[in-house]
Image 1 (spheres, rainbow, N blue to C red):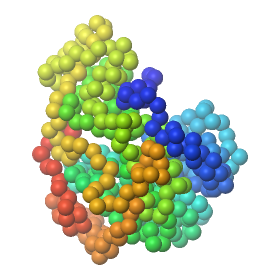
Image 2: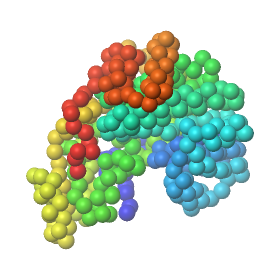
Image 3: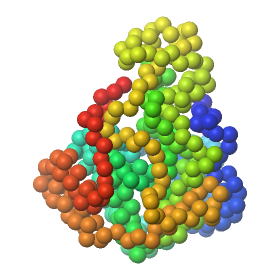
Image 4: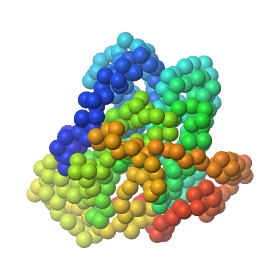
Length: 397
C-alpha cells in the first residue's frame, strides 16, 4: 500500500528542505568520519535515523533493537535502497536493559555518537502500574544507564529523543520524558548531550495513522477522534531532525520544528478522510462502533468506508500541542524551520536522586500501584497536571 505522508498531512514539501541544503556538507563530513551506535534503531524513528546516517557513509554504524523481525526488515530496506557502505554496518537484536547488552558494550562500546531512540511512546501505556513501570524503566532508567556507559567509553556526544508532550505534560508518558530530560541535563556536565521534541510521526508503527493502513488491510472500519488536532512530521523528517540535533546541536540543546505556515495542526479524522480518498474510498460516517462493524459487509464494494468519528474522552489526551514552556530561552534564528531551546537550567539533583531511590524501592518490593508512582512524579514535577478521565484508549475501537 503506497502512503504519501506529505499529501495526507497536507504539506507540499519536506519541512527541513532548506536547512538540510545549508548544512549538508557539515552533516556529511561529520558522518563519514565518525562511528555511530543507534539504540532502538528498528522502530519507525530509529529506522529513519539509521537511514540518514547510512546514506552519508559512516565509518561505523551499529544498530541495536529488541525486535529481531524489525531489524531484519531494516537491513533488507537499506540494502534495497542504498546498497552498502565502506564502513562497518551491523545490527544486534538486544534488549538495552539486559546483561547481554552490557557485555556487548563492555567488549566494544567505541562510538563517537550514541543516539537513543528507544521509548515507550503511547499514552495508553499508563493504564496499568506494570506497563507504567516498564515505561519508566525504558524512558528514564535505561536512558541514564546508556549515558553512563557512553561516558565510561569516551563517547563524544549522546542524543536521546524526547517528545512535544514533555512540555507542560498532562499524561505519564509526557511526564516520563520530561523527567528523562532532567536526567539528561544532570549528565550534561560529563558528556555533550542534545535532544529533540517533535510532533507525531505520520504513519509510524503503532500510531493511529498506521492503524488506518491496518484497518484497510484487514477490512475493518476506521475510528478516530474528530476534535483532537496534532502536528505531524514524516518518518524521514523525524530522522533528519534527530541527526541535526545530534551533530549540530550544542550541549543541552533541545531541537523542535517551528510552528509556521509549513507545519499546521490537522485532526485525525481529516487525515483518515484524506487517506481513504487516496485509496479510492469516501468516508461513510457511522453513529456507533457496532454500526461501523456491520456496514463493513456492504459498503466497501460501493466505494465507501465505514468510519466512526467521535470527540475524545480518554485519559491523558492534551487539547493542544506545544514544544516549549514559558520562560525557556529560545534560539529561533539559526535554522529556517527548526527552533532550539537553549537549556540553561539545571535540574534539582536531590529530586532526581530521590526519584531514582523511590523507584528502586518499588522494584525491590515487587509491589506498587499507579497512585504511588504518580506521587513520585509529582514530587519531581510539582506542576504536573495529570488529566485522569477514568477511560483509556484500550476501551475504544
